[in-house]
Length: 91
Image (cartoon, rainbow, N blue to C red):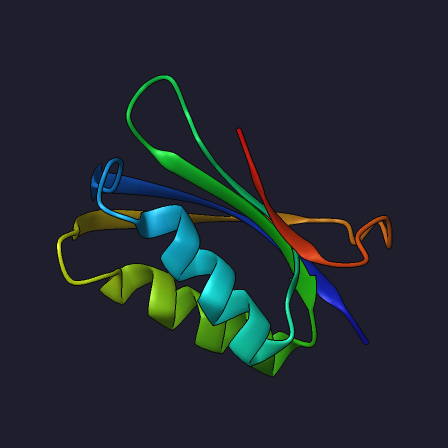
């Protein structure tokens, strides 16, 4: 069974390699979806995967890369679409 989540990450998360960090974490946890910067300074990740992998990915998002300072990770449940065949960085 797959689940889907949208994560909105706030703090010092742009310009610090956060999207590349998320891409590596997604590969490690076999997560599908995307990550992108938002105009308001947050990062958005939309992911699909098995519940245990999504939870482990969320933990990685809260930690962030070395030069980030994650203040909050908002989690929104969404319906899995099955449209993703990989995890990509969107511009």
